[in-house]
Amino acid sequence: MLDATGKKLLRLLEPDQAAVLRRAAALVLGELGLRDAEVARAVRAGLDDADPELRAILLVAAGRLRVEAALPQLLARIEEGGPESELAAQAAAKLGAKGTKALQDLMGRVAPGLRRRIAGALATASAGSAGGAGVDALLDKDPGVVDAAARSLSAEIPSLSDTHKKSLADHLLGLLGASKRSPLSAPSETAVVRLLAALGDERGEGPLWDRVQPAHPVEVRVAALQGLGKGAAAPTKERLKRLLACAADRDFRVAAPALMRLQAVPVTDRTLPEWLALLDAPDAAVRRAALDKLGGRDTPEMAEALVKQLRHADRALREQALTCLGKLAEGHKALVNAAAAAESPDLAWSLARSQEPFVRAYAPELREQLFTRACAYLEANDRRADPLLHLLRTADAHELRDRLEGRAAALRKKKQYDKALDTLRLLTRDPACGAPIRLEAAACALKLSPRDLAHDARAADRSLEEFARLVSNHEAETRAFVTEATWLDPEELFYLGFHFAERQRQEKTFGGDVLRLAIQRSPRSKLAKDAKSKLRSEGLD
Image: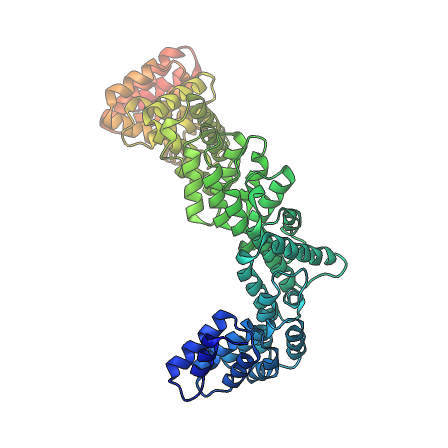
């Protein structure tokens, strides 16, 4: 029997009352939970009222008060669609087994949009049960229905008791276990995985880790990665491999959540080789994230992996890798090795220029390695010598000049005039190069000259051309050099003097002096007779 208050509330529901009073009375009736035949009749009558706001309040009340007699009206309202269909579905789902069955029967007859509303309502009503139509809706063929059920169940999880949470987890784990015999669709498995993760049940850790592997659909893997619990911060060796494999996946939807999980995982010397695999990932963003995590580790393996990034198309990645290399002792070694072993001059130049900012900090043994390799390329007439020499010049131009001079002198003393000349020509490229080096180069070129006395041959001889410039600009130094260069043979002196004796002014005088020097060094030879004859013919005797 209704008390006086209840009767007054029913009186306020009557059509002759003000709309605001009727709505207030309907709201209070639902909140009070007054379950009575008179209340049920009033609610049913109000469901067909002309006031839409009142109807909405009474739809909610019909569910709370479990007015089973209103089920036909609720089902009709659902079939009509519109904004009230969702409220009607929520109310019908709260009517117990009868309402649940009616909704399940109705799902096969309505449009997809209404099916999703029904699924969401069933899920909300059955969230705490071991089975239930809402959980069963997760197996529907319509992804929209599955998503609606999953969202409704997820929204109910915070309000569930521990018992109900365990019951729901049991059911979800059962679905995943059964999927081995009868595979779930990707949307269904994704929904189950997300719900299991939201429950936080420890028993779900294993199934989640299993589903991060490539054998599962992308959406399932993403859901599993997002749902991994506290164990992801300190994974076992096998699980760490799975996380790293996901982070290096070609699909960034998989890589992104894996990288988020890996942020909390420490890197050790033992696990570093597995982490380095991220620097081969297809996505440049993954590689950059890996550099943030690993870039400070000064090991040969790390340095080698960083050098590989310098060839990547992504400029930001290249710059980040180069910055890391510049801070590592092993990075310096790796850069030197890479430049020294570059497959082409273009690559060697690229690697050399990348090292310019920090080559001055290189250890002496690294500069020695660069110099040795540059000299080997130089002797082989390989253009890869130029970028290595440029790098050494950037480090210390004076040191490089002194080393090249010393090398040229050593090669000349070993009578390796061709190699000495190659080195000296590097030095003479510098406009500030002094006369002593230019004289050494001219003399080495003279040693290598065919020394053909024919006029045309002499006109094309570069050694004679260089001596002509030196006589013109540094006559005294040139005379002194030729006199002191005991390693110049009489034949070479005769050739040099023969050529300049035919010239004019100071060059002619220089030629005569060189012919006399040739006679002095080989006085009884046929060459001395020829030199005297040339002096007479040119009026220099």
